[in-house]
Image 1: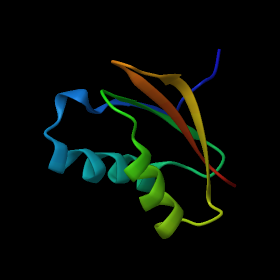
Image 2: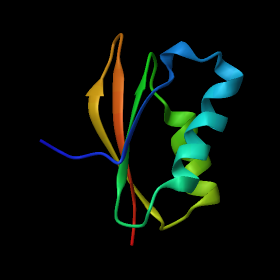
Image 3: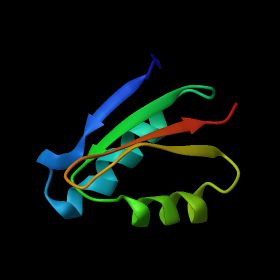
Image 4: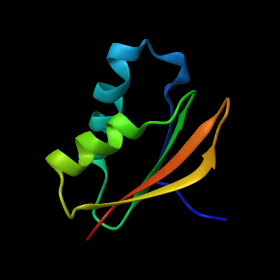
Length: 78
C-alpha cells in the first residue's frame, strides 16, 4: 500500500476551485513525496497544466480510471 503525504477528494469542490486546491497541496508537498487526487472525471487537463508549469518535476500515475471515480497519484520528484 502506497503512502501519500496528502489525499485530496476534489469531487466536493466546484469545478473552478479544483485546480486551485490541488495546486495549493502540490506547492506544500515536499520533494520525494506524493499526493493522491480523487475526482469524478479524468483529470487530463490537470496533467497538461502540470506538464506546462512543472516540466520534469512530477510523476503521474493513474490508480483508478473511471467511469465514476478517478484516482491519480502525483509524486514530486526530489
